[in-house]
Amino acid sequence: MYLKRIELKNFRNYEEAVVDFHKRVNIITGKNAQGKTNLLESLYIMSLGKSFRTSRDHDMMGFQKDFCKAKSISVKDDRELEIEIIISGDGKVTKINGVKTAKNIELLENVYMVVFSPEDLKIVKDEPEKRRKFIDRELCQLKPVYYRNLGRYKKILQQRNSLLKQQDLREDIIAVWDESLAEYGAKVIQERKKFIEKLNRISKEISLGITGGKEALEISYEGNVEILGNYDDQRELFRKVLHKNVKQDFARRTTLSGPHKDDLKLCVEGVDIRHFGSQGQQRTAALSLKLAEIRLIEEETGVSPILLLDDVLSELDGDRQNYLINSLSDVQLFITTAELNEDVKRRLPEGDTFLVESGRVEKLKQ
Image: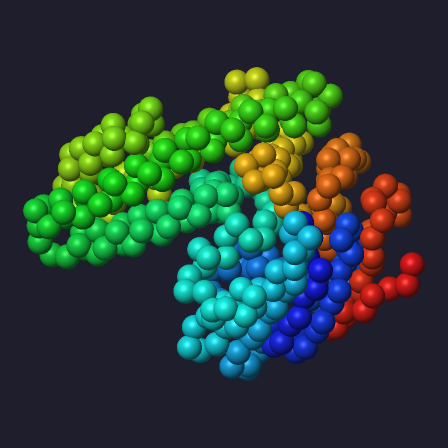
């Protein structure tokens, strides 16, 4: 699949723009703070309905504007798909081929995208929340039911935490919420378990390729609650853990147990590289995770996703650049950069180059 066109109105610093893209490689150049990442952000919201940079939709509205709009045309299985997202003070409206959708979940399974930015290079050594977001973002694309279950888990967790902040502990009321929290929490845990097993298999293979067979990345699920083999046992265990720890939760005024506290453990030759890895090992691991995302989407859906590289090539050394470029033969690629090395450019497949200046996009002649 590939993204053919984007049309923007009041999106970040783009007052109005229409850009037609190449189906293979699109290099987006320009000085800093001109709108290169904003353009990638407008593409990314077509896959999940939300930004990879902010949790607040209104942040994407132009300064002192009361709405913004992004509309894309993508091609999948030789069919064109139009997605339009309008954000205003009244909320967000999403349309697929002109028909309004009720929720972001209806966007899923239409456009698959993977974004790789300098922030992702720090995913290995950053706090566990970053690694949970990585897992959730990928699983939401692959499994719309996961998106639904994760959303319900978060809402129930929020309600339970609100009860824990009250003056008196009502264990009977909290126990009712615990049943639902255990139900959806167990579903989240079990889906993460299956995903991480696949991620480990693919990432190990990729890391060996990057390092010439010298280092194999091992990924494991570091669950806050013990990970069991099936959903029923997982739900019952989680319910018991919640009941056992309720007084401790009340003392801390928050829920201390559950998948919202999970983490990914990343090791090379038995060494936990989250804490003790070299910068090279951590960057190899981050690149392996991102390339594994692409492979997983291809394996699960039969579709090659679109890859957004936001100013990340300059952060990688020559060997990692080569491995990345050589891995992307079937993927539409968007690269933002202040200046692309000519040697790297020659190694890329055919494509187009665009210059961004103050929210205006110009296609450069080859």
